Amino acid sequence: MSDVVLRIENLGKKYVIRHQVQNVHYVVLRDIIAHNARNALGRLRDRVRGASSSSLKREDFWALRHVDLEIRQGEVLGVIGRNGAGKSTLLKLLSRITEPTEGRVTITGRVASLLEVGTGFHPELTGRENVFLNGSVLGMEQSEIRRKFDEIVAFSEVEKFLDTPVKRYSSGMYVRLAFAVAAHLEPEILIVDEVLAVGDVAFQKKCLGKMKDVAGGGRTVLFVGHNMSAVKTLCHTGIVLKSGEILFRGSAENAVEQYLEHTNAEKSYFVDVEGRPRRIKSGCVITSVMVQSMALKTTRFAISEDMTFTLTVRLDEQNAQIGVSVFVLLLDCEDKVVLSSFQKDSDTPYVYGRTSEVKLTFAADIRPDKYMVACGLVSRSGEAIDWVDEVLQLEIMPVFLDGKPFDDRQGIGYVRPRVSYERQSPQGPDRGGE
Image (cartoon, rainbow, N blue to C red; front, top):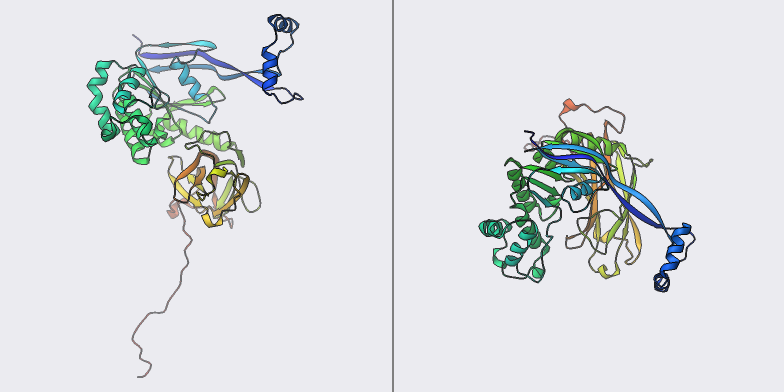
């Protein structure tokens, strides 16, 4: 008997995108009313003549296409790729949230999906009531929820507020309880999308430990995440998606290397990030990021070469009192922060309600390797109010600014601090009078 529990054959999903055609006036309410007031005969006439009854142009967009994949029982598969690569679309198709345009999926066993933490929570209900509601939405039996109730509550650490409506919960408490419910499912196949990107650092580690337990229990897991360290830790194998197609399949470690290498090959020194997914949403946002050396717009730098980041920032007038500052982080392939730079609040040149540019310059005094850049905004109190991951990919070349090659045998660590040395004469008793 075959141990393949999930078989994907020529899977594809197409969406229809509509664009406003050029030279068409701005659509207002009266245009919509007039358009909807057309009689059925007129709309039929337009279709027969091949004319569009609206000012929109259709375009077919394949979010996923020609995907063939077999996943065996007990396999933990990491699905990685840039934003828009088709990761979430693949998981939605496997979860039967949406229907494929072509191809088919054959699944053996019970499937549970954790695609969005908190789906099924009702703000007016208490935490206790939402545990049962959310568990039912995720496919758990009432007897199963009762049996695991104490364990779920203990994991979430919200015992004191269990009988409080969740609309009064902080965002952290909400996430804790939602993940605790979803993490205690017992399906044969578990599909997980980006759940480790929520909550504080300590809770993320706790979630990672729970996911390790699930993966180590012989269950089949599909895990999507931008945390490359988590992918390598949790997963046995991995696939890299690009433009809706599988670019690579192999071990999780090799998949991460392929992803980083391919991403770094697209050496874009300017990125529009206004539409990117964010960890935090507010009226203050970074809209674009550019990086350059002192002379060139580039993503490749020598050791000790200055890097200048130019960030375009748009601030909501309602946040004029919070004192916004910009930060830039450099992270290694394991998603660990290697270098950081924060703009001082006193240097903020912003005009609230308008767009401003901020430049941060610091030296690339770090070990030659490939790094990812994250950036965001913090308030005067230190609270993050905007955060965008994977903004840019940089490469520090194995050569110093003066042209001297880097020698790995020197044992240089990640960061090379700039240190000044001062030689002093030996101190001793003053014998000048003898």
